[in-house]
Structures are given as C-alpha cells and as structure tokens.
Image (cartoon, rainbow, N blue to C red; front, side, top):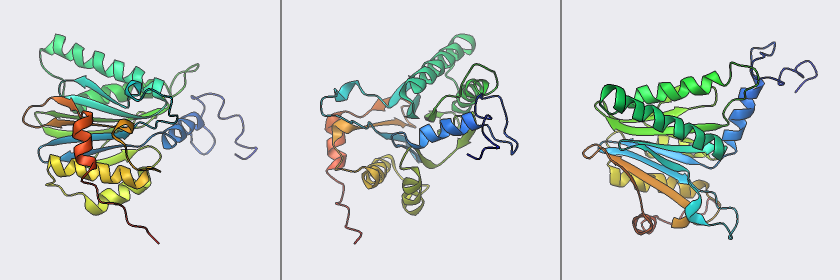
Length: 244
C-alpha cells in the first residue's frame, strides 16, 4: 500500500481516493486463503463439496463442519473465517424459519440469498463494525428448480451453474469450465466435484477430510453424504496423471 493510501483502511466506512473499501478487500483476502468449497447445479438437483482442511492429526475430524443444513431444501458451504460463517448460517436459519411462520411456506432460495446479503452489506456501512470474512455458497431447490448462489464479503450475490470459493477457486473454475455440462446428472456431478477437489488438495482425498451434500429436485431434502457413500465415489476417481 502506498503512503498516500495509508489510513484509509482504519474503518470499513472510509473510501480510499480510488473508490475502494480496504476492509472489504481484506475480508475477500481471508476468503481467498480459506478452504475450498464447490457447488454445481445438476438436472436433478444440486451438489456441495468442501475441503475440511484438517491441519493436525490430533484434530477430531467429525467436529469440523464446512457444510450446513439451513432448511430441508437449503444448504450452505462456507469458506473463510469459520466463526463468521457459523453466524451467517444461524441468521439464514432464522430467516428461513421466519418465512415458515409468516407465510406458511418454505423460503425461496433467491429471497434467502438477498436477505443474507443485506446482513453482510450492513456490516460494511456502519462504523465500529467489520465485514464478514467469509463467502457462502448457498444451494437449494424450490419452485424455480435447483439454484446455486455465491455471496461475497461485500454482500454481493451472484448466481452460478457451477462455481467454487476459497484457495483453489481459479483452478477449480478452469476445470469446471472444461467439464461441466448443463444436463449433468447428480451422480456424475458428485464425481465431478470430487475430481475438482482432488486437483487442488495437496494429498490424496480421504473421506474424513471432506464433506459433501446433495439436494434432489424430487425430494427437495438436504442430505449430507456419510462416510460409506463418500468412499464409494472416491474409489471411482482416476489417479491424476503427472503433468510432467
């Protein structure tokens, strides 16, 4: 940062002369350094997968969560500051249940995304607050079909057919561009996200070190894959060829 720019990062509400909010950019950097999470839309549902980033053999794998159920038909994967992600997941659950109470129906995925982005944007607008250092992949199935959204720390929502957040985003997106098809099935979609994860993880994928979940268009029910099912898909992965 140049000397002229120093001081503009002291508060999230102060714009630099070139129109940037440095606190928001710092939050985005926290996301770029976070564990990789991937989401794709399939013809018969949606898929989420995430690297749990187990950094020590003494850690209890089962306690680490990167994918969360929000409602029966909605799931979320986080990348960035874990605590920030859990707070926003709780907010999403409250918004979802409020919709059930007020309107007696499940919340639309796009409406939920906009409400969460309103909360994230609020934390860039008032002094004494800081932006959430986390991006969310929000997936679900509603009357409009399977949907996948990404929310960044600034509170900007974007909708995708397939995307990733976290440390391996660029490489995963390149792989998805080459291999994703609009009519991909849920079964092949699971294989695709695991192959994408395998490309960016520094060691062979172990079922204890990743999470995956699906929501089908038929049942509209969030289901997190157990170890047995993860092993089944991981066995199908072809060994990555040496690039040399």
